[in-house]
Image 1: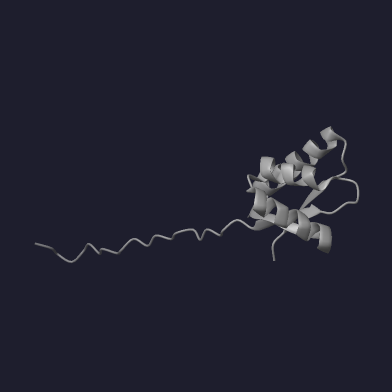
Image 2: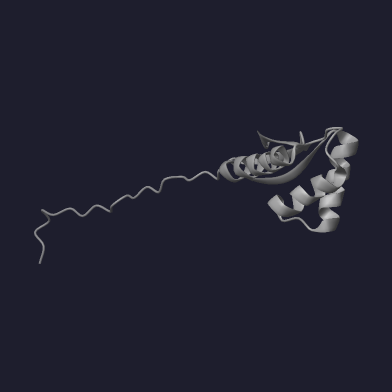
Length: 103
């Protein structure tokens, strides 16, 4: 059968360890010039929030100065923040959204 010259060794396979992408927060920054109704409109249009949720987010930003709108991947967070800020600029309001890494 076998004369003992052949040695079989098992193949070792390594799987690369995939890390989850780092998440980013989109922050709504309060200002004294943008009407509350417009902020709610932007939250509903860009972030697909319900009326009640967008009202709560807007009021939290109004009282606290900033409020986390959504936590998502970096590219999505930056795109949404830019889209919302640009929408406000087009309407002539200084409404601002920022992104920062989640801790």
